[in-house]
Image 1 (cartoon, rainbow, N blue to C red):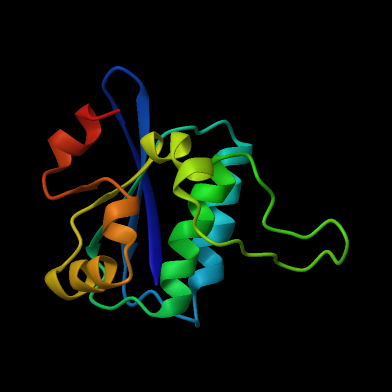
Image 2: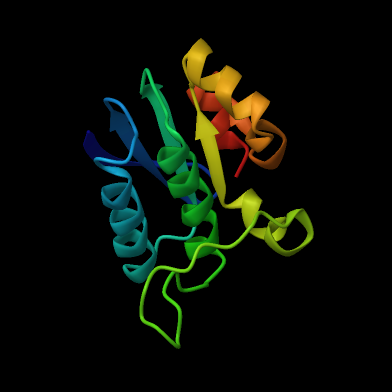
Length: 136
């Protein structure tokens, strides 16, 4: 997995996380850590570019949801144990932050997985980069 960061300006500055390679248990933490780094650095609008991702596992799907939690200002670590604490998707609670975390360019197999597990309804998903950036 490679993660490359670019920025595009529209009404707001949009940070694009370009992911390349399979998104799975071997690297999902990298995506979460990069999202935490971006959020800590002041980024508030992020577009996750999945055009270079041919496969997403359940761990990869969980990392995408965790990015939303990070941009909602929630810690992924339990205060009691200090270990990762992953929460279920809650459209009402997480809905407002969805306008700040969007997906771009999933390949057909990845898009099908997003649809089957319900994440395609949770995320705004775009096939055109310009439209995605202008949606912020």
